[in-house]
Image 1 (spheres, rainbow, N blue to C red):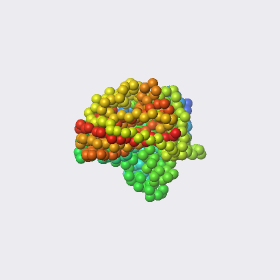
Image 2 (cartoon, helix red, strand yellow; image 1 turned 90 degrees about the vertical axis):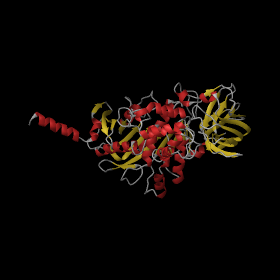
Image 3 (cartoon, rainbow, N blue to C red; image 1 turned 60 degrees about the vertical axis):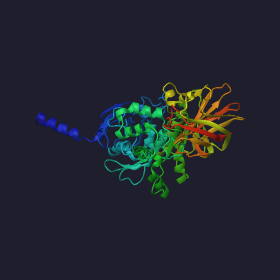
Image 4 (cartoon, helix red, strand yellow; image 1 turned 45 degrees about the vertical axis):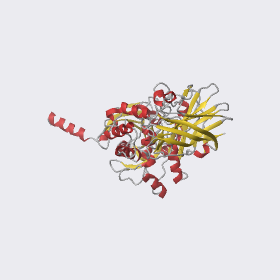
Length: 564
């Protein structure tokens, strides 16, 4: 046989090799695990950079439970990869990484999402038609090649990867009979056995352009402008043309409603990228357990997260439990993850233990069934302090009491307002320099409606405050944004929570509105003061309205849920 013919046959063999061979392009063995890396083609040919970690010894023909780690925005596959099991100095991977799980009998898949790291393609912003299909395809390949058990697959993701984790539980692949399942390239049915979404969204539109706390698309809310500007600057040509067009239009500001690009963006960020809007999944849940199984979920959310606040997990919890009272969902709240949130290793280690136990039960068959309760760690400004963790049966039990404040008016606000306190509460600007509690000692700003109320006894806020306003306004488009502070006896003010609300065509005469603030788990002490601000212009974190306005707040009522 000639050398030319041999070379031709070898080349043909290489081009005809199955794409999933790339999982094991290069392998390295360790005492308790082995790590393989490679480039693998996704469903549309996009090359994805993968790492597959396995136990050191796997008997021939043995399939393993599979955990797919999904990383955060503009990160890469290394986010949950460690050289050691414990990884004690990293809050994301402490007792929660590829080596940790592979050493306990799992196959672990880490890969860089399209447009990230060394993977090809452009960022589709967690589209169920792109990024979700990538995960389904890769896990399907590992089922087809005999690595993974098709009914023992779990997804674990944080931030950008967390939204995708929620979506994997609430969408279904082509030809799959139930949500949370999909077909492998060879047609085998793959099922999600459990999901662990953490510090992420359930309504991506709300996360970027919030309006109160309720999930709704009209009117569009108030853009987190420094956050969006940061996204645009950082991802540039890595994002698809559609994503670039949507973000650019939001940055242009009001008027939004009725604009075809804005309407397109609303649909794309909700129906295509937000688990809360996967109505087919919820309809299937209502019909019967046979029609749609319940997928166990542990959702972790940060009280102080300015991008993805606690309501992201709560809204999903409420909707699932409203359909099935015993739906297996557990919530954990702490002081993590984005920008100014703290990242305490004891906080994350506690939560990682909960996740490890749940995955062990549903993937390894361990007998200890997790409790689907609700747990919360308080926000503490001391970076070394943690706990105690509150454990209750359900979300409502976290806040059996209420503390209400009647705040008289009139107080004036509007837009634009020159407010130095606004720039001091820009989580993006602060987060680039440090993490931790947002504080100020600046005085009150003219043009911002402000109330102070003394605290006559200790009260622990655990949940989302409700703000009711009676007002009169001039202007075609107004904002009624709020900031809640704890004022210590020495005058230092600590930002506890905030909210954003936009009103289109507010009308003449007296108007009323009620909405929720983001919330916190925060102890107000006797002798401190509560300070509430309502402003028509909460820049620089939120986008200033294009339309000027004058607002008279005639009265306010603030209700804090929690424990006396």
